[in-house]
Length: 342
Image (tube, rainbow, N blue to C red):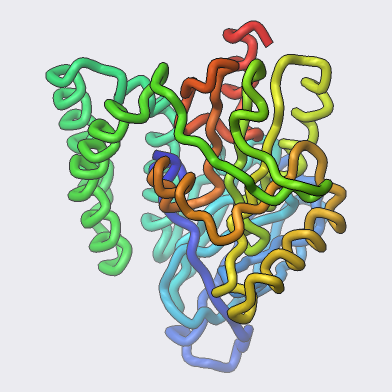
């Protein structure tokens, strides 16, 4: 369900060249009020595409060339980032408040509608609340709610008439899949919903030595982070998780991180995968319980984990509290802990 609130973020490589034909590059300019940063980075999944200097008054302007029309990341610091849709030939003007980053962003100029749409779509997803509340509805109310959600998402999409065809087609397809996605999650929730016994992991390698199983932690709440060293969004959550671990160290809860690093992403070697995990944990000085799943996919399969990071909360009796718990960076997680008396 997290996919809805992280609907986009794609990217690529550039060369600024004012001598080229206008269709071969794009212009990005604007102003950020209350800005304290000096550089804007435009990045893709392959890395930084362009850096743009910000003047003291918060204004900026530059040209860049992108390999393809896509969603890129506009970022001034680790906690200030937003999606932006870029295509050669665009002339985009962005205004906003650095203290209210994405929420305050307004785009104008050629190609601006795409980014304005993406921001509106993300804001809609964030206002949806906890998807688990939808999955816990009775079947008739559930179907009515999902139909209403699809109508709302389609309405947002159709209200932007001049979207790039690539973006429109992609989002239209996602909206069409929304009902099927919720239906599958609803069926899963009947099996993996709150109060059901949690699937177990057994004999996972403990970085401190030996192995651990879920049953070892009975009597405590268990917050499980399923992650991997190659997963950017997983790494982004580590500082937040470490803060939680310190704050709740005297509470009846154990924080367990389960690495899913596998041979395929480590040169085909399981030994290399384990070494990569161990080196990463040591380098990051990661706290909590650090486990490696190795060749065992049963826990991931039981929870139908198709994307990471994935967070799971289990109660002291080994029953599921939330099969898709809030991330460490989400304030709703601490609210959930409080409701459980932690």
